[in-house]
Amino acid sequence: MILDIENKLEHVVTTLEGTYHTQEVFTKFIELHPKEWKKHKIEYSKFNRSKQFGRTIPLPRPEQSLKKMISTWLILHKKNG
Image: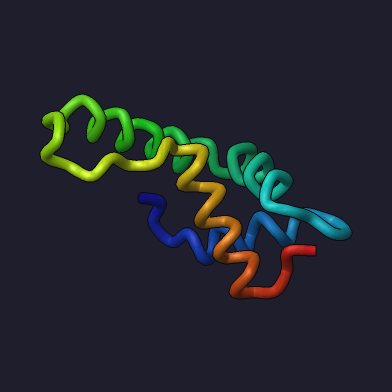
């Protein structure tokens, strides 16, 4: 989970020019917030190692979950070009 994702995404889209889509925001987010991205991937990895087969709900891969967060944010803010 990425803390304060709303503000971070707002910051990312202010650095983009013209129209943008989920992939452009995703790439720029990783560029501007590498520590948060690394922490997000580490949390996923820890969860994957700790789970017991059949006892937990699998998490989406970090790339998928961040893109979903971005997509949802863009839809809510009507900024998905």
